[in-house]
Image 1 (tube, rainbow, N blue to C red):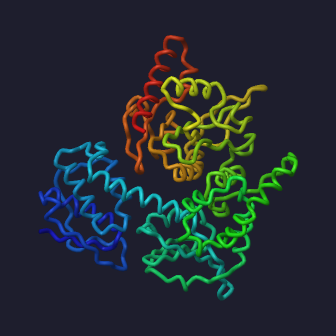
Image 2: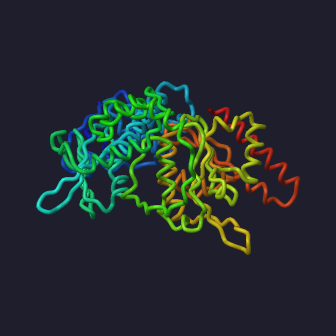
Image 3: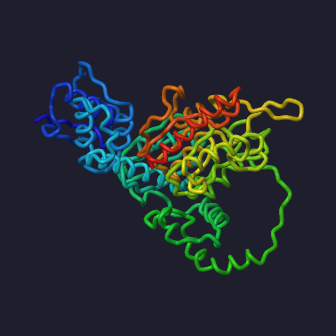
Length: 468
């Protein structure tokens, strides 16, 4: 029996080193015993670990899955993940592709639970202002179901880079002083003050985006579970909003629609954007986005559209000229070709969530025409913030990446379409397919080439529908 002691509950580095060493030594899963000995140094080497040697290789998808699932609170997670590594090392290179395998299913469920908890943390952390010795600090309390603080702390650093803040949870706390991130011990709810001036802001914000005509209490409590309400300042307004929903709906119906003059959009930064909790609120926040310079010349933000529970998501590169004017994705020539291909593949577009990696139209003016220009790496990276939020809300089973820019935005690496096209790529509890963008077909020089590539696109879409 090999006893393996890790330094902390999400000691992925220590687990990976120990798992590789055990696999190379031929230690089967049933002869390993995993435990955790918490230390103050979250980056220390696991006790007794020796650098493994020898040929060892597992898929990138398995490594990514393990990095997510290890955050689950299930005490058996280390052993379950090692069992997958053992099988992959012993020859089952494509073990993750067997969706019916009980071990794969269990680990996938762990990863999905972690992703749901991550989404809730990013949506429902609410900072309260604390002033001491003329210094302002923002403090938040959150109670995660899983060990997700370490992995999510960098997200809050990026989002609230200009603030000095602390996020306290029962098992771990994260502290940002404007220059360095520090992880510390857990805390108690009493360590966070009960009231501050931000509460009025959150209540006003939530009330302003609340649409009584679309009230579905069951859906709202599913997206915003009651366990989080006591930590959400805006939750105090929910009972009154529900009671007044019929009266407010009647008032909305009776009030004539007036189109106001277009006002200048307020500036938005990663540090000041409120964290939306619904699809509609997310789109409303994106409408004011000025995170890169593309907003200066585009007509408007073109956000994604489709059911919030869509099983299939399509991601393109960016809106074109007609999409920029209409404010909707894929309505121009490429969109019309996509609609035709979807129909031939047996896919109803109304059941699909359609969006783009970049939300503003990038173009070069030529006379009266606006010619498409490819977004650069920085623009794709900045706009990935919105795409990540969309994917976290929709949680599609299959995501189709239309073109190299979309693939780069989602996969985080340069993609050669001819090499990656049509094969399933596991990602965050679902699958990803890379294929061509419909606009590629429009640029082909002859009808024969266009017909051949169109048939291939339809085949890719039909294959993805089968995965769903």
